[in-house]
Amino acid sequence: MGGPDLKPAEHDFTAARRRLEAKAKSAGEKLTSLEDAACRVRDGDIVAGGGCLFSRTALALVREVLRQRRRGLTLVRNLMCTEGEWMMAAGAVERVVTAWMSIGLPWGVSRVMREHVEAGKVAFEEWSHLALGLRFRAAAMGVPFLPALTMAGSDLAATVGLKTVEDPYTGERLPAVPALFPDVALIHVHRADRFGNCQIDGYPHMDADIARAAATVLVTAEEIVPEEQIRAQADRTVIPGFLVDALAHVPWGAYPHECYGLYEADFEHFEEYTAAIATRGAAAMEDYLARYVFAPPTFTEYLDLFGGERLARQRRYARELTA
Amino acid sequence: MSAVSTASELLAVMAARQLRDDTTVFAGVGIPLLAAALAQQRHAPRLTMVIEGGIVGPRIRPGRLPISTNEMRAGHLAQALPGITDLFLLAQRGFLDVGFMGGAQIDRHGNVNTTVIGDYHRPTVRLPGTGGANDIASLCREVIIVTPHERRRFVERVDFVTSPGWLDGDGSRARAGLRFGGVTRVVTTLGILGFDPETRAMRIEALHPGVTLDQLRAATGFPLLTAARVATTDPPTPEELDILRALDPDRRFTA
Image: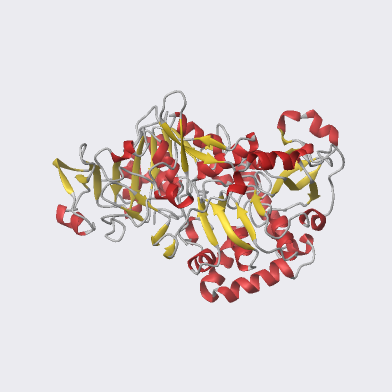
């Protein structure tokens, strides 16, 4: 314990470039089942999650990864929420790389996170929010690091082993934020055509960079639209299809997290979830995973646990905020 | 409506008064967001608020205050949604005048800890982490800490420097490579604190009505300096409280 956490393989831009060069970059059909998309995640992978906290989380993909009993994963996500708790409690992750993890202001510090991290079962590698964004940005640019003005002087810099670089023009020293090339990205978008050309409404979060940084890109979309619709609004396409390896059509694929303009996060569900964990701890988490992750064989059956009325209400809330 | 304020309302009012018109502020959810919205409605109509989720210039919808900085409520009727990385890069470029911050622990040089209580690798309590706090502390032109004043929060030295204030004082912030910014004020439920310009040690600059120097010192876990003249703040006005209560009618953040 105690050494810097930085893993050279994560920011090896040459290896990452070679890996991409060796990969098919097809303009062909990407549409497949959720199960088939998720099986591209391997044990031990560095998995990057799109969205942010409880916004546009690729929750259907996360659920499927857990159903396929993946192990030894590193989850990288700028701000982590219940998806991180699910992955910890299911024993899927051995390390998280993040700027922040809990659920949201009213629910305090994540109890599941505390139990796993304080007991040393999961390593928690902490970067500032911008630094993590720049790690994805550097990887998306295909370079090994980016100079930045953040994280200097803090204890965060020391714990992750952040190095500095000399500006060759002024001689000043700046933090050099290393690239992070994930093995696989899990991304949820508003719409895509069957070739994987993706459009996102509202908050872009870090998804465009993550899709460029990762070796393999898995996408779920609320809506699969005709190719002509994408071509008619090509300026809205943030992830071109040739970046995408597999695409699944999953309406409500972030629920109970939010999807901008389509449904608000289900705060009542968060309330019930956190109350159960606060009362019964690990047993409540185990019951939750059994009920919501492992029992329903399909995502549609998972959504049935919430019920159509609930979903319709959350859709109405979203419209009120974004109309 | 009653002009007697709750501790949270007092904090929001005092924080709002720190903001000037024609400036920009990086605000988190809760009290900082309410403070920025209050300032906009009362004395700073040309203040631009940015929020960590990648949001520029939202209009906060009364009764639908956001729980997180990156959900739909936080971006209601926003002017721009540049994304998280690019929003922080606006701060790195120097476009953000003020950053509001809170924290589990704050020390005499304005360093803030939101990472761990105890040892980083074997924590007694693992806290949620920096989020964007380290970036705000590193990149904004000035940082204002907004926090309840409690002895367990105000410690001699934070267990972990998540967000750098003046580090060890005496120019150590600049020597560590932080060329810009720094903590200028700490707005609390008891008063307003600042920093000695030389040593960058925390000092008392103002007390809220009815608060004594001894009371504030007793709620602080380290010796505080005292400014040459300690002012008394004006109590929240009915107008300020009305604005806050209209923004948060269910008193979710101001109870």
